[in-house]
Image 1 (cartoon, rainbow, N blue to C red):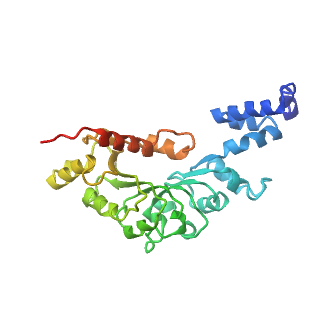
Image 2: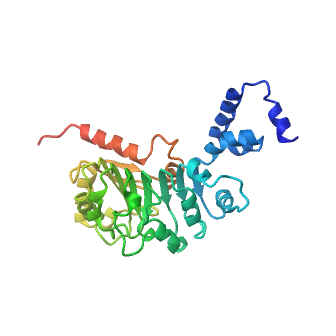
Image 3: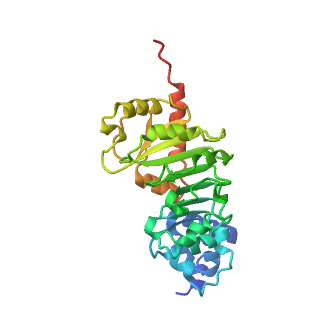
Length: 305
């Protein structure tokens, strides 16, 4: 049965209602099947299909982007792709191409393995090509001598996540330039040799006045924790940080199981992946959970000794 016959089933349905039916089906995960019905239906559902894109390995989207025989207009992906997540298996030769073609995305997560970061990409992220409002980056994404927040890519960012083994190596003074920043997350490895809470306290001093939420995320396998070292200084400041005594905007999150802090939020990897892969449809995310916990902590009755 060809596409015209497939579409003929809906000939008695007004076009606007038919379009709504197919768009709803696409929103519910049947977009690719709908796109095969006819060219018209494909045009209806493609904006939904390409709204939130996760790039991994040699996946379908990467192959579509590389298709030299594509009949899509030059600005098709820039128009329709709203969010991008580059998973750690993204191919180094594909990422710069995708970044150029999807440069209007409002949310971008660069979760790319260091070995897969091309020099071309490092150059691109220092230009004014990208202006997201939500961004997740690691230090290795930028040239080693340019770890600062003065790059144009940070200009419009309201929600920023900084991750990687080099989380502390940035020129933190430049954070003050981010006048629109309201939410900031710093992902720190459990096995770091530095005191993460002292470093976070230092970084908080350079955050702009617009900042409302600061999340220090404990990243590591198993049940390891910063406080497992037995260092009383870390234990004390960890408790103070969790209780809002270091800064009322600050909260702790953990990706591992467990968590010994009274005020901390779980942030398992699979949830963070879902949140960055489809931020348009995730209403309760790390940012909103942190906001709620900070509010609850603020409302807790004070104990007068």
